[in-house]
Image (cartoon, rainbow, N blue to C red; front, side, top):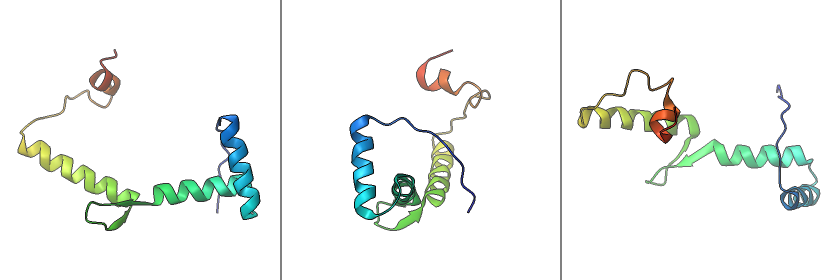
Length: 92
């Protein structure tokens, strides 16, 4: 498996807590973080209790948004993707 090196900033108490849990599990800090991130983003539980992958969840969400936009007969602005901050937060 190809790995990509990245850096994150953690509060000191969280770092110590993670190091401690990694020690207890007998794994590296990196492995512990990978496992926890993977478990968090791997599945999303739908309202009916069914587990689906994160990509399936996003696709389902996009389909629902498309149906909803047709139902309320609204169109997104043509420049939405390039001015997303403006539309979400009022920033120019």
